[in-house]
Length: 111
Length: 112
Image 1 (cartoon, one colour):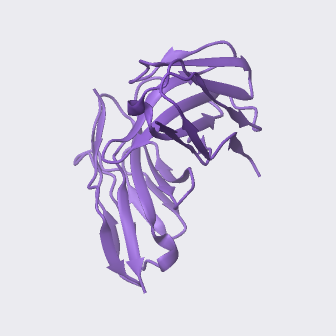
Image 2 (image 1 turned 30 degrees about the vertical axis):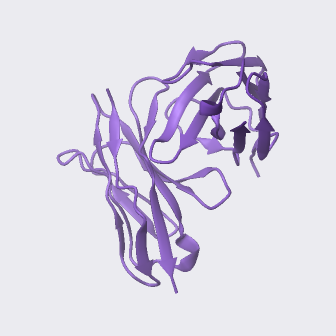
């Protein structure tokens, strides 16, 4: 079945550092890919998405490119802020109605 | 601003109690979902509904049931709460298949 793999973390970075959170997936067909963010005490929010190979999703300085050849959708940001501290979930939408989430990667940004 | 509202942020219930978790969305979305979130396991789908009075089992439906009598409301029912159902419960909705989710803030349920 479908699966999403990402490290649990925590990932600890200094403010203004470059961020990469890796996400790889296994799916049949051509899934849509998503990144969600969960701030402390809140539900998840959609951060960005890509629906086909080579698409780049972007939002709030975050980017991720759908790489079919490596089955990856890594999240990047050029300069993180303390306010980016959160848990980041990679997800894929494969078959009808079915969305599979990764375990979430906790990011801590220190001043 | 569009919203998914979960009725309680925190709940404490006793083993064996029947527990109702309520979720309401104001976006006229077709699809609604219940997930539980546990450390190291991420989000796991319990049940979903793609239309009023329709429901489908997710990956971990055992011990749960759902009700969707109106489009805007999707209830999760724990028939007889057990300690292994202590978890964060997240409700989500989306306009239709292929779109991203809008999540509620979650209900942290503790069963003692």
